[in-house]
Picture 1 (cartoon, rainbow, N blue to C red):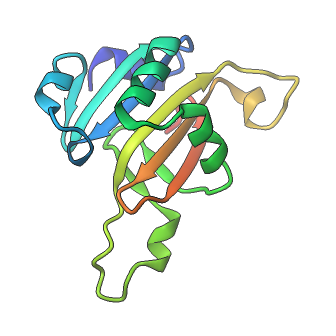
Picture 2 (picture 1 turned 90 degrees about the vertical axis):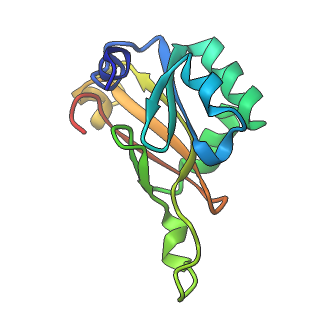
Length: 148
């Protein structure tokens, strides 16, 4: 894992966002990997927030805040180490197992600790991760930075 992603996951880069694009989601992974970190099944990038939101929308056609609104009520697992996920739609997979469930895109950001809000926000910086699955489903996960 490159140092930028480690710092992001540890909550040390709240001004940045993390983007992940699976190999199946982009036409030229090689060019994209020149600007980010090649991971097993795609590319991860850590970018300044505004630039990252713009890059995500440009690459996917999806506004990240629209994705967040759509995904926040569908809890799944988003692993920002391996870029694997547990899509809630996988429970509805065909009996023959042909439905593919893996993150196609991920948008993540850190929210700084906020004791006034309470809950996990009082425990530390919180990572919010929103995923679009290969099946088209959307889901999210959040956790205290440095604990996943």
